[in-house]
Image (tube, rainbow, N blue to C red; front, side, top):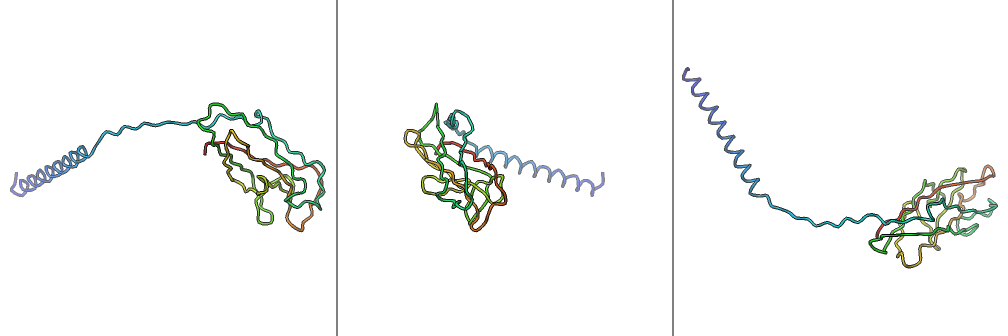
Length: 174
C-alpha cells in the first residue's frame, strides 16, 4: 500500500470513528432525556339521546300566502321535538343545528326546493344561523325552536306548490 493510500485509509478510519463517537453521544443524550409518563384518561362517549323516537320531525305550515311572508311572524310554527337521553355523563348539553343554507336579506335560512323561499329558524325570538349551538340543561326546559317561511324582500315566488327543506339537530356535551 502506498503512503498516500495509507494516509487516506487512516483518515477514513478516523472519520468513521468520529461519526460513531458523535452518534453514540447523541444516542446517550437521547436516552438521558427520556422519562416515563403515566396518563390517566377518562373517555366520555357522546350522550345517548334519541330525538323524537328517531322519527322525522315534520313542520306543517298549512296554506301559505306569499304576500304575507315576512320571515319573522307569519306562519311561525313550533318545531315539536322530544329528547330521551340515557347514560349521560352530565346534564349540560349542547344542541347544534345545521342545514343547507341560503341567505335572504343578509340572514341564513334553510334552503328549500323552491327558488326564493327558505325557512328561518328561531329560538324563542332570536333568529339562528346555520351551525349555531344552543346550551341547555337536560333536566330543564329544552330550547324552544320555531320555523318561519322567509323570502327575499320585494320578491314574488315564481310558482305555487309544496315546499320542503331539511335541518340536522345534533346533541353533545357542553
